[in-house]
Amino acid sequence: MKQITIITNKDLMHQESFAGKLAAGLQAHGYEVLRSTSEKMSQITTQMVACWGWRIGSKARAAGRDVLVMERGYIGDRYHWTALGWNGLNGRSKWPKVTPEQLEMHRFEKYHGTLLRPLREFSAGHYLMVIGQVPGDMSLGGKDLRGFYRAKADWLWEKFGKQIMLRPHPLDKRSYEDQFAGLQNVHAISHGPLDLALSGACGVICYNSNTAVDCALAGIPCEVNDEGSMVFRLFSRPLSAAPRSTEELIARETLLKKLAWRQWTPQEIAAGTPWEICGLPHEQLESFK
Image 1 (cartoon, rainbow, N blue to C red):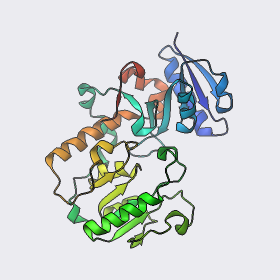
Image 2: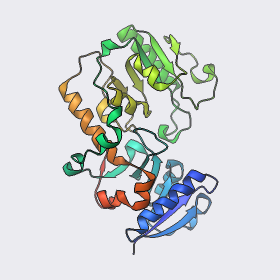
Image 3: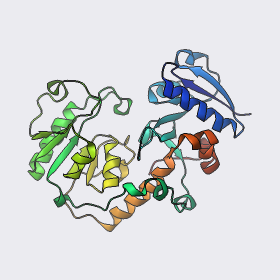
Image 4: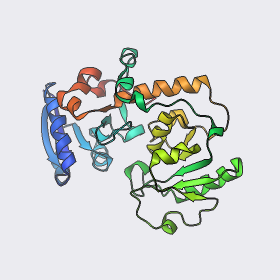
């Protein structure tokens, strides 16, 4: 019988809740599920482990284990959907292959179709946005983004000459001066709802924020600067005012259809649906494309 250890931080209720659901789904597929805590990682003996987030996952991976990482979903209510990727965080995870048959099952349309908007031309917006992220978040890999914000704001102003709006992350409680010291060429700060800020944007620049997924859904031109984003391959080119192409439309729709197979409801996880649909992963994994 295959074994897997689920590691949780016992002080975080959402980790305990999802661990229980994951255990039920794995047991339904014949796995012996062991439980442990982050304080007892040195005592784990199974090759496969599962955990919430990459802060614990990176330590297990460094110890040579295969790590199933639970994370917030990417589309829709991120607290309802949970991603299940192997051996990395978000765009750096490996995933079960999505087959052409699965793409034709209309999972994206069923759960997320109402979020999709037509591609929007650059000229339809009024300002450019630079997206802030929380310092210390595992998705940044220790990178300080203050230099990134400055460089991108300067480049946007020089290239497009349009007003630039900066959107600090809502969870970043540092002062403006601490977050963005020396930042020039910013004309406005956004603290309101993200969808309202995006509604007036002609283009958006992210490092690897999930805001880029919102841009893909909203049809807004976007530039992503790190492969940790789930839509890096869609938005890895520099921001451009060029007309949107049919190829971009097709690429967006294909990527979003695949992305719908990267996140699961609590009920699906408890029922073992991710394994019924995709098989248990690490025999056939791929980067997210």
